[in-house]
Amino acid sequence: MATDTDFKDETIVLKTNDGKVFRVQLSEVRLAETIRRMCADVPQTEQDEEIPLTNISGPVFEKILVWLKHHAAEAKSGASADGGADDEEDPAERFMEDDYRARRRKIPDTTVPQWDKEFLNVPQEFLFEIILAANFLDIKDLLDKCCKTIANMIKGKTVEQIREAFNLVNDFTREEEEQIRKENAWLEER
Image (cartoon, rainbow, N blue to C red; front, side, top):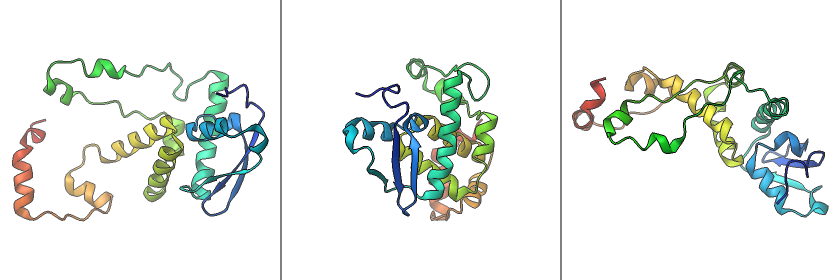
């Protein structure tokens, strides 16, 4: 399997679903696991061929490319986006608690570093396109920050406010809504 140093100066060609072509250094897009795997599977002689990004439009990939370049440069310099160390919780520890209610009450960290917060300050529809593209490209950190941004958008809002914010149609009858509220009364206890 190829490593970052194997591809440090390799130029690859990516083509989005609207025909826009991007010539990029593999080292710049190394955080996109899908692209890394594609390049590792393609013989060196064929890497001048266009790699199709069939699920991503040009404007969305252009935005993601800015994020990738920023974080690739950040990784090179050893700095982190929020200026601190990576202190994410070990997922295994999260599930070791015996009491389900204690886990349920634990509020996950939805902090997004300032640079990423400004970067993701885009129209909602565009943000959802970035989420889909980050998922397709397997850019875990970007996907995580996008999801935290969405979580922050709905934090503290009522169901009606969330429906309005995301243009969601309420397809429940009053009886169904009442039944759901009764079944989930514990949510209101907080």
